[in-house]
Image 1 (cartoon, rainbow, N blue to C red):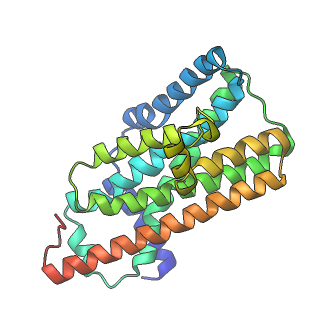
Image 2: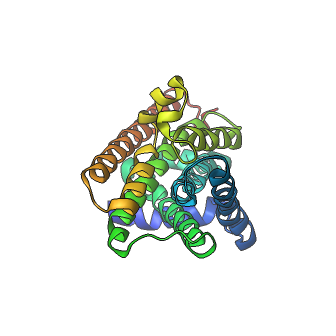
Length: 261
């Protein structure tokens, strides 16, 4: 199988087989209703307690909401290989590991974009948030970069799912951490020193800053710097994720523990 076919077909089949939220009601509750409720909560509470407008919270919340797909979805997809008993097949397969694992990220990137776009549409329809037409393209670039970065983190965490059973706990912990340190609800510069120091090294702070910069001023130097920063974080998470999965595969081959737990 060619790398392109493995990426497209393998990713699609894995998503259909392992993604537990394909039931429409459950998908809507998890991927749409929960993030939208979170956006509404902060967009109504934030302006009442701070001087920041609802737009600040809607844009930040809509970007951070992609973590529901990027972290929860990706972690579930990778760890699902072990739970479904297909992990030994992957470990012994001669297929390209890069194409194989990247193919599994693509559906979750699409999910993340969907979640964030719905959040932005909700903010526009219900809360009156408006983004100038000229800002749509740079905003879309920043949003897509953020989703890829968050999904790359999910791939890295997927390696944890191969050796640790309680993946929902890990996913929830990381999701809440991203809500706290990314600047989605509280500006990064106002966070405690320890959290502020770690913010540049995790996905989404750069993407959220880029989305807000695009909505306010379009493709400025601030927007470019933020997008490049987010892209760099995405690349590091992606390489770390692929490397970790490959390293665990070598451990499994050496020890004969193909289930990796």
